[in-house]
Length: 152
Ligand SMILES: [Zn+2]
Image (tube, rainbow, N blue to C red):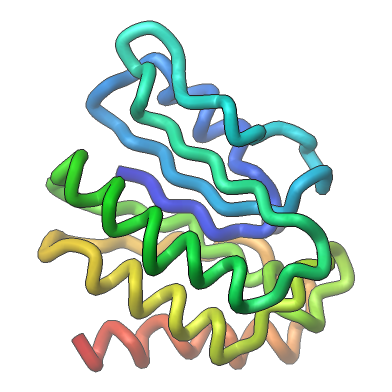
């Protein structure tokens, strides 16, 4: 399973796995931001239909909208798919200080998202660092991830 909280839609990941029922792709991203893909009605194709979930979030949304996705939609998807491993596209450009995005998620919100991901299944996790363009904020936000891993 691939979970992607980078503020940009993972169009390459989706394209690689949209027809594959063995990889569930779950993404949250800022609606209308680059690359413009990832509409909610994209659920996969062929055998992969139902194994892609896109959650575009409107600009200026903030923590509450993002946390609804990770506390309500994510656990349901994980339970249904029952993954063996979860690979996370950890892009910290959803943060409020990021110059390339307008989602306004706080560091506390990112911590909560990471916590919900880690609690969603008792499987191995791999977090891949993706975006994050305010360098000072990036350091603080990346740090949240191993801190939460050590809590679990
Ligand atoms: Zn990004």
